Length: 146
Image 1 (tube, rainbow, N blue to C red):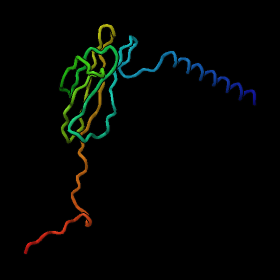
Image 2 (cartoon, helix red, strand yellow; image 1 turned 135 degrees about the vertical axis):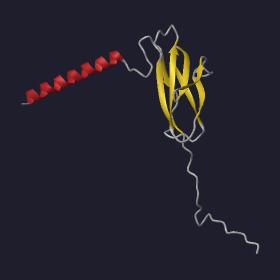
Image 3 (cartoon, rainbow, N blue to C red; image 1 turned 90 degrees about the vertical axis):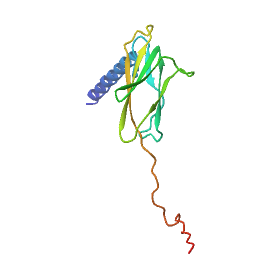
Image 4 (cartoon, rainbow, N blue to C red; image 1 turned 45 degrees about the horizontal axis):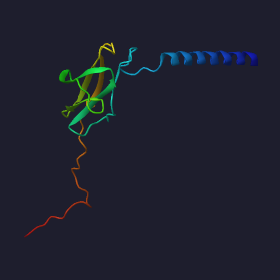
């Protein structure tokens, strides 16, 4: 029985090694990555609920020619030059009351020889909680003059 158990362990260990070797040969793939070396990804972290009236969208990567930003299916702007930090950015104004879909279509240079990649992010504008009632400790006594 022990021999059968040991042989099963060796077989599983061999399969795990083979799978790890295959994954290391493929390499990790991120959104917008292709075999030619061109890549694109969103920069920064987006909270689930934005409290300002807009969002700074930023795309970074390699071999990017231009990025087209569209909010809810309407084109906002096409950015062809990166900023000083190498990111393609724009300010997106949001309206409250519903979620918005921001799509960024990344066109790569001819050296990257890649098809355009679309990145997307869902944004929602939420305002901070407004205090409507004052507690008894915060209540101010009225000043009557009569």
